[in-house]
Length: 241
Ligand code: FES
Image (cartoon, rainbow, N blue to C red; front, side, top):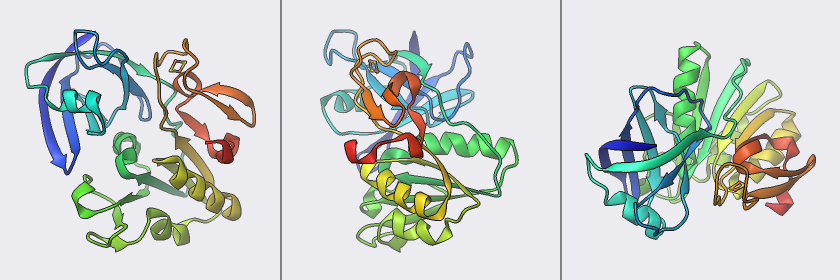
């Protein structure tokens, strides 16, 4: 489906926010994603997966410029159209809990911002923790922030920032690099906390056909695009990620 771009702007360092017209034809839940075709011509050949950051009167996707595809996307102007398939994937399962924490590393904050809106809509109490390398990368306007170089907020990793808050009554929703999620998983296991993780993965089709996103889990092989991207952390074989 071709949807019109309403705005495409830089919000931090190499981080962009693209807002797209929402035709109101479908619903979405936090943790789901769109497969986006950057150009009408066949380059880049494959669609790219992007988490949904906001979904109401418009669709927002926050993305980082990391290669040719995202560089091309960053040049798209208001009024142009992009071809999107979605929303895809399972999304987070919203469960009430005494203590809900959103924990994101880098651009992993993107689906958690959408989740924040869903939790607010249900009057669930929660707190948020996000980690970035430097102040330049900070692109959130809520929650507790850590930067590795100490240029903004707490100095250190988001793991250091959040670890003492986690206990057996905690339910974490997390997204970010697998190294961050893996460390978080160790802490959750130790403290007997619950956690749903949204995995970042390379995807070619996004609809369960190409098998390009398959991971080995404790429950067999799973397609991140189709059976994820959200999994219970205990299911993941972190040493294989
Ligand atoms: Fe093709 Fe998941 S990306 S099966």
